[in-house]
Image (tube, rainbow, N blue to C red; front, side):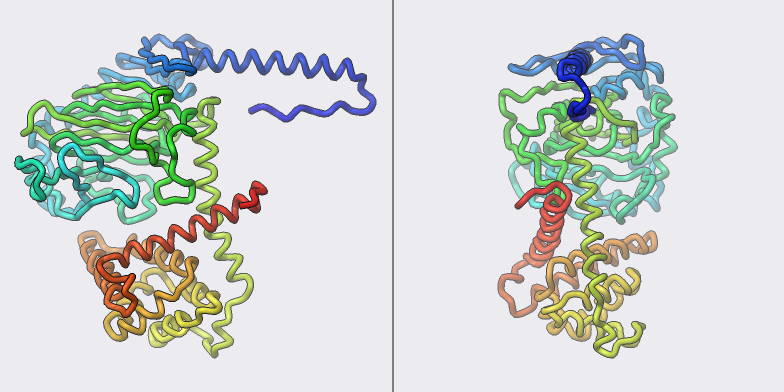
Length: 496
């Protein structure tokens, strides 16, 4: 990182200061040239020349985008690639995986235990060849058992409602630190058919995910916040890779949004530097964190599923072409923390529950208290204080009781809530999901069906017709945006 120029001290001769600044500038220029050579050419890592051959594609006004190619690289060679944050294809890296033979064709359904086949998974839905988006607005998904998904696949009649393509995307086999129910490892038994490659054994493994589809699928343009090994078990994947330095050309979604790592572009501009890489069965693609990518998946025959496993792992920082990504990621992290900071700041002003004669909260009075503070539209501190104090596991039961006993009163009160209160409630409900016993996940779906159904049955017409989830999401997103603008105003001096 470059330091700001140092002003000359009053006692220093001006010519001496200029000479020092000129020498420092020359040194920085040499460093920039070296970095550009490393980004565009074979580069050097850890003091040694990389032996892997590279494929590159030049674009107007851009240096070439480099993809290294290795046949079973050593750990030292791979560390050099990681230090440069450049993508690489790897062969002979997962040859010992049992999954390469056991999962072929429809073998997956045979290696998964009957109990695990009943696991409920979230499946993305689209017409064949459609785009499975990760953003909130474009997401279309449903829940079904793993057995149902593996058996159903894709129907043959094109362009009809029945011909929806099904895509099991990012189904967790391993998660180091789950932060929501969706992160929980649903198929840990499949880990016995793979092994963590030696080249990343010294790094922290965060997630291992399973991806299964039939027919052609295309992912939306996005980046990941972890380094990634994409391993193809069956089928073909063509990955378009774009370096983080091109971010300003990709209309990234706001850093405060639910999908800050996704792009809003429909088509890439011609000036955007990019490269396509195709990998097949037994091949691996290293995608550095922060690199934009979209994945086209296809199979050789309609009967065969496309199967892949990816491993997300954590590595050190930070070459120059990664800076745009790290700026965005740091903002995402700080804005997330600022959400909690504003809540604590609000509560520090003083919760007035005691002013209402409420000395303690227990099961006998919790529902009445929540209704009472829900009606305090002028001051949200009572409501937020209550939500923060009540354990996540109990809050779901309190709301269930209100939905069943006083649905209209609860719906009317909730619709008057401010955006911070809505954020806190949804955050607490998500925390409660993690307390759900394995095998009882379907009760979560039932709860949200009742929760949103009660809101849609109210008197406000703009909450009806199935839009209640979107209305709640708008409030949560509004709070995220408010926190982002407040943080940038306070920390960065933006007058927005």
